[in-house]
Amino acid sequence: MPFKSKAQRRKFAELLVKGEISEETYEEWNRSTGRRDLPERVRPKRGAKQKATRVRKKSGSRAARKKTARKKATRKKATRKKATRKKS
Image (tube, rainbow, N blue to C red; front, side, top):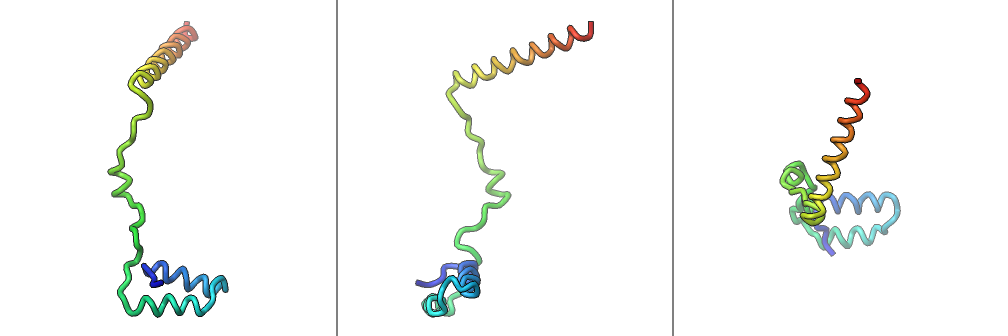
């Protein structure tokens, strides 16, 4: 089976040095790849561009979001009341 990328070739070379694969296995893969120009990676690493374009998914139903918003509002009012009581 041929190597798919330069990174995969490096990984196999590392495994060969560690002794986790045999030299015959590495040579077989290397021969089947030939002198092909391989990409650095098969899939590009997830970069800043992909992170920025990712849309945040709204969780829960509309009713559940409204309920949560109401709870937050009442908590906020309660903390304001406590703050004004302490000042007096």
